[in-house]
Image 1 (cartoon, one colour):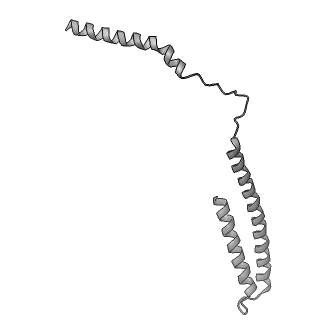
Image 2: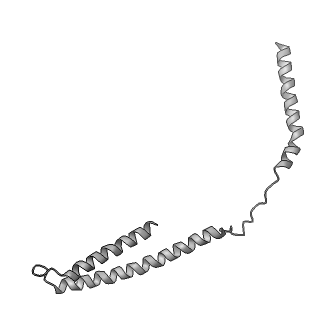
Image 3: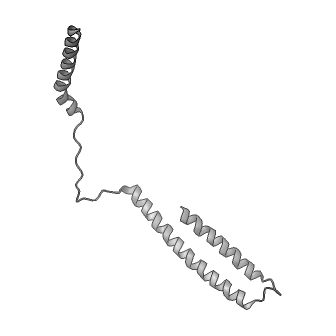
Length: 113
């Protein structure tokens, strides 16, 4: 039993020595990477810049559409106040509501992405 322990310890010692001797060669295969300068912001790359430009354009379109939606809703409110809907069904009122619905869907879809 003592000889088994001795052989085991010799094998472990030999393996440790081999790993220790090979470590400089293994380290040379994986050169150290350059550490990032903490003062320097990371470069976002052209894909990130294009994505940001697309998002900014999308935001401009949403704002423009919201302004248009507000104008249409204000016009619709004025028209409803003028018209007695119990007597007359205004076609222009229906068209405005359809246009408002369409514009609201466009805004929702743009906001979703």
